[in-house]
Length: 458
RNA sequence: GCCAAGGUAGCUUAGAGGCGAAGCGGUGGACUGCAGAUCCAUUACACGGGAGUUCAAAUCUCUCCCUUGGCUCCA
Image (tube, helix red, strand yellow):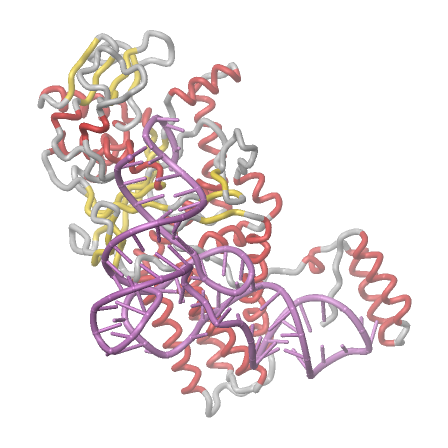
């Protein structure tokens, strides 16, 4: 299996540090607002990565942090007139809820920054003791020039990063030095050896990952936007604090989600929350949409694209439905074509997993799946498929479904769950059709359509 | 300016030296009282321009053009 490593900018053979144990850390959200579809993209991608690692037999521990205190949270909480931690808690719950709806279910542990204050303080203390960090009247800062590798992940050089900065804090040694601890008197603030204040942005992740993983782990992931400065700072902190290099064996970053070709932002008015998305689309449709593009590529969100995904997904569902029907029918348990189809099933599996092995290439995996669907449909039309083969096909789709986090089984149609009154109308219409009274039958269909109920004859 | 990712059929996306991909759409057909849905078949000069390397290039090299993102917080 190969994974693209942002550090080396190429695909590398995946070998965990410790036999088949895999430690994966992915940067979680700052819970100052509802989550948006960009979060959805990133966490769906890592969910599939997690699923596939498990499927391959790795013993995975997937850790994610939750940033529950920072300037944005405080600002927003002040605007709303509530406690910052309360705001964080509320948004965190919404986040969990969104993730569950999107079938993002493989994080083993969520670590909140505020529940790791001791670890954060300890790590800062270590950095000061070892001479990487220094205290000033405004806070504790990391001295970038003490870490010679600074910039290695984002491919920048430290001199350039330290020339022009707008209004750098004059107490800092270098303009680019970043805060580990911000001294603040006003609430919310916590006690520390350097007085009251709160942690800087980058330190929580390394304090948390060191706590649960030690100084080194296999995979660190996040959105593309986190490479600089966030991940760069993490490397500097962790490798300086522990002296272990490299901190992370494989750095993985997901591409951006754009809306209508533009970056999603509140000022552009194209900001879409997951909550809003799910009012219009089935979560599975969004998931399929995300998986139809490679995780590192940018993906452009639009209604057209989502509708296209909806149709594609339906093609899969339809086949599953047809298979269920055939399993209930009186057809042969096996037949002379079985070998041919068993082989087809095997080859499809191979192709699918080969694509997944190649840096989690879900679009190619899906194209193997659709080729398979075409061949199976053809087989069904020719009456070539036996019950045994149908069962095998079902098993294969279950496997695919597990890895992708998609449910391929049939959904109850809207008619099934419709009101009894609608069912009565449908029954009457059936009788009219048998009597060939199409005029009245069509009127019923037409009027049901007017109120949003579509009837489709078998 | 610096760093990064791109330009592939009408659209959305894979692929990365040789065997012309997937989905959506278009067209034709099957099915249907009709419509729809579904299925099958088919379609498309596909690889931004130019030069080079090679027996062979969408894939490698050079060059030019264009797009997007980052360089302050951001998944």
